[in-house]
Length: 152
Image 1 (cartoon, rainbow, N blue to C red):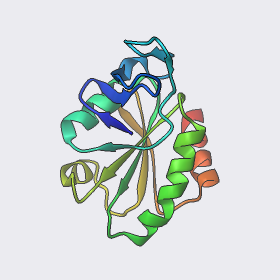
Image 2: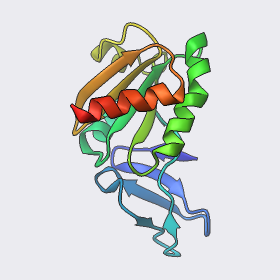
Image 3: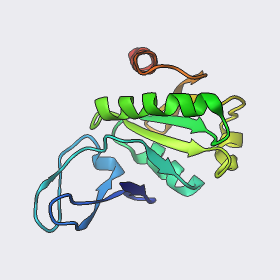
């Protein structure tokens, strides 16, 4: 399990258990544990964003594109798309970071980005929103959405 703060992704080394920080600016590069020097795998799971400050730091400083899934726990289509989003996170580990924003927990982000339907997938690069798609999609369609946005 990983956790975000305003400087990076915090995760435990699978070998020695030490807590490490993958700085947003270094995403896409190889990270090593500060204690045992084991290589840390890229994040291959969606990360939960719990506040505006962390979200802003993530999208502003991430060296890789960030796909944000705006969702809510009561939303049926959001529950259906969650495993598909997980697949994309796993397949694109190290090249893309997948973040999830619970619009019930952080409504200010949904308001700020004018999210009017959920689930909504939004792709950010270099701090800017470059594409958006509302509605549940299977993993291949999510990948196609990302690829088309990155070609523009």
